[in-house]
Amino acid sequence: DTGVSQDPRHKITKRGQNVTFRCDPISEHNRLYWYRQTLGQGPEFLTYFQNEAQLEKSRLLSDRFSAERPKGSFSTLEIQRTEQGDSAMYLCASTRLWGRHSYEQYFGPGTRLTVT
Amino acid sequence: AQTVTQSQPEMSVQEAETVTLSCTYDTSESDYYLFWYKQPPSRQMILVIRQEAYKQQNATENRFSVNFQKAAKSFSLKISDSQLGDAAMYFCAYITPGNTPLVFGKGTRLSVIA
Image (cartoon, rainbow over all chains, first blue to last red; front, side, top):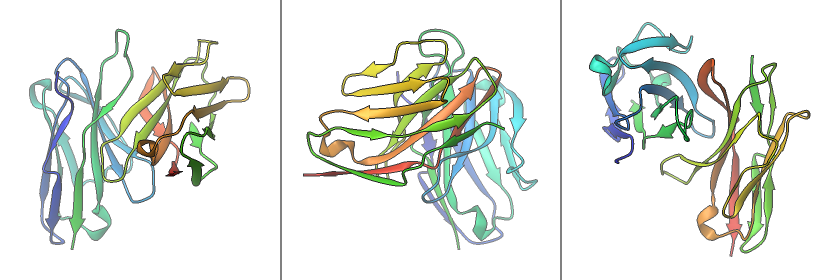
């Protein structure tokens, strides 16, 4: 079974541009999470999905951020009108709620966003 | 709100020695899970060990073990026979089944000295 994958791994964009990131979770995991991590800090929760339903959004997720998970498989995170403060590592994680490894979140390699 | 505190921003250990990383958390829940994650420089975050709050026995995974003190809300990680590959940021994290985002501490940077 492959792990969580994210694309792209790095993104450099100019302030004001829109960017979109993709996450492919582990296939049998029905929950998918997005986190943001800035240098020297732990990840901070942004939003999560159970199957295709977006169940919770952090107040960190401003109106410029939107996330989708069509058909309950991969997910996309879009940032509109990027700002320099959006520069961070965006992490995706997935998990399942049953079985021996329930609630363990497995992380992808992240997408590092630099806004110039 | 649940919080996780890691009071040691940096730690170092000699190769083959033992080191303990500290973590405390604040919660009013009785059912929860605790994790230690490792994040090597510029690399993926990986799960090291997990502990269910209802289990009294401390979790172990090879050279990694925890000291879980539920009453004190303490969850320390012990790394035995430290190896150069153990050098990384270590994050303590907490989750409740009904409140699903992981809550992370700020991390401890571990250096291993050859």
